Length: 230
Image 1 (cartoon, helix red, strand yellow):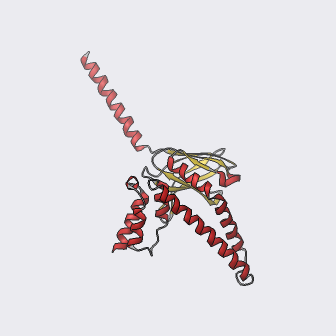
Image 2 (spheres, rainbow, N blue to C red):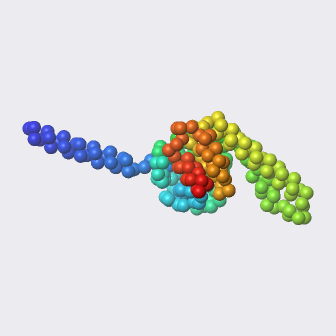
């Protein structure tokens, strides 16, 4: 009887360990349900200065599921072959993420499931009016001849630049008020450029607190800091 119990216990332990191992390797998913999304290919793009497709699937009735590229907090984009100019930003932090909304109203598409995505959505909503105006003026500028309509072009360009400056200021304010947010780390990492000095990069890192040290955004900033030090 004792031998039977030992065998059962051993089998149960092995089964439990197998389940735990499979759960560890099985990364959480991104699920989507979008009205007006035709059946077609949906891709997940990793981002590190360029877009790289890391997973793909086919949408059915507006629904799709993608596997996140990695559990490390990072930014990715969801794209649709039917809409090549549209990318939906998603912040992964090891939890399930959900995308919902109507593609006929792209500004109302919601990414939820994690604190970071909720914070990014709230921030985006807060600057929506300014962002829409900046995009509208950009379209008008592309359709305006800078030589034939130089005065009009200059006025629109100045307005666009003012709106962009306002958005940049709002991002800076978000970082100041939320130094522990993954969104803050993302904003700072996306502001990096090759011409930044060691002091400038170091000042970006100094704006984050100790809870944001282990993510892809701060790691990129540290890598850039090392480059600027050489």
